[in-house]
Length: 227
Image 1 (cartoon, rainbow, N blue to C red):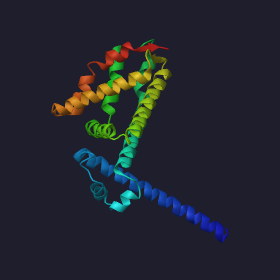
Image 2: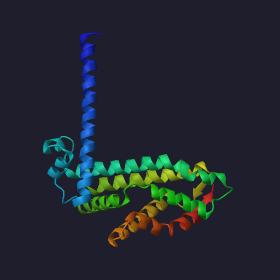
Image 3: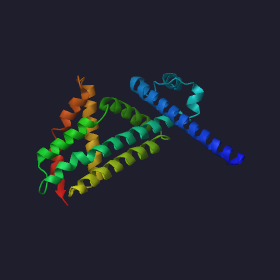
Image 4: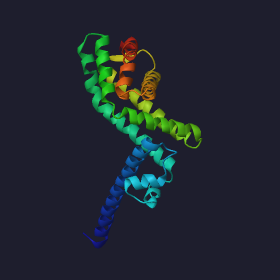
């Protein structure tokens, strides 16, 4: 290998290490922001507090994010992506029993599937608090609102596509627009979680699941049909 080729390869290697280090720094800052936002809210959390919680300096923060709002949007995108990946890995197993029955699955099977999905959701209370903070910030800041709305709609659209694909694999579909139904179901769960937190439930996540399971299974069953 020539000296020039060796230097190029070495530079690429160093660039790769730098990219990896930068990615780890961003992840640590977002993890710290998640904890601090949940404890104190977005407005009550300073950039210095996030950097200190992550073990970095203020300069390290600004070398990765231009502002607290930019970090907030990156964090929202990351959390939505993680939840979609977790659901994507789980959905095939959840809907598999539907394919083993003739025609439309009964209410019991749909209830079991929904209970499985809801039980699988991680840190529901913390995410509800954080997402509420995100929404309030976006509602108050016209500069943040479009990006937040874009991120939220992208999550809803990808989740609807995931559900459509899973149902199609077992010969089913929704009788209404799947995106509208997905939005409605998300809103119902978020509302139940908020009420559980406000009421001081000992286990808000279990209380929210219990609440939505009273109405969700019959609703989903009535709107599911054979393709």
